[in-house]
Image 1 (cartoon, rainbow, N blue to C red):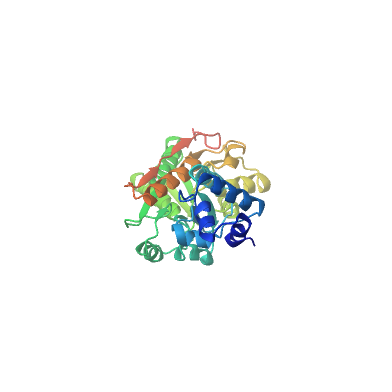
Image 2 (image 1 turned 60 degrees about the horizontal axis):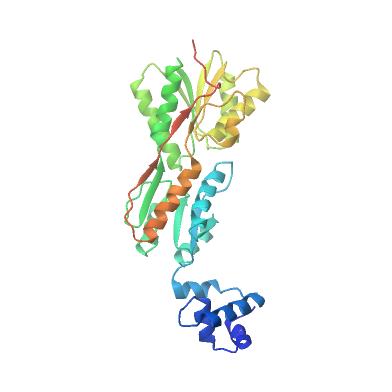
Length: 323
């Protein structure tokens, strides 16, 4: 591996002169700097990241921590983060698993975006007490080094269930999400509040885990109990796609006629299933960009307020009036 000592030897200058030139110092003339940079390029010199970090105390890298990469949920979110950071000189590291948290503890990244329920609040607060800064997308946590950029889950779930009621549906199945998910718990809480205001509803709750497979299992259960048209609210689109899959491949029932289906997230695939899925929409790219913007403001010691990503209802033929 080429070192700055090698560059100094080729350039006929001291190691300190090479170091200053590579770091853009004005202590070295433009002519000498240009000569050193040219030699460094010819030798394929790669700066030592750890040494640079010790010197500048900045890595220009942001870590996003995810529980896993399954499903089609994360693509637009990550693209929104990457697009925002890249034009501002930052790179994005996508991390998962307990070992990756060493990047925080060892200060190898400048800040974090957290969408990983396996982090405990106590663990995150410990990192913040050590000076780390983070934006959380999956919890409410009070600390001066933490900013929250959360989906308006309650509004979205309320929109979904009230839409089914407006269409005349009272016999409704709810396919829930994982108990560890902040988004799932907030959506379910809103569902229960709507139910309390509408005692005439006949509600059936089926446990899910936000996966397509869970939607298929739920659909099998629903089909076995089917007697008259019903409505189904899946707390995310992945499970709604699973309902489509099982119903179309294993029953004579028809989505939008026998089973009136609504999801949440408006993932790309939901726009192409037939009939088009009714769902709750928000911009995942905007969510990612907003989280990135808030984090960079924090790293620059600017004041930030907690943000919320708002949602809208997208109507599709998967839900029709019961009349």
